[in-house]
Length: 78
Image (spheres, rainbow, N blue to C red):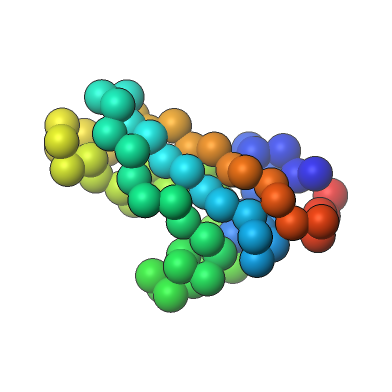
């Protein structure tokens, strides 16, 4: 399994899910690799860099988010 600090969109399998939660408690919709690609992010984009791309609608902050990945797929790199 790829450590989260190295994980990129290309490391996600079709069933893997990315969850983002702001420090204020606001949760963002669960994201998949297909959704991130459709948003225009390249496959080499690091998952932890999503923090700088997301602005919380509740507290309007950037970068205070917690990114986590639910690794479901059997496809692993590393």
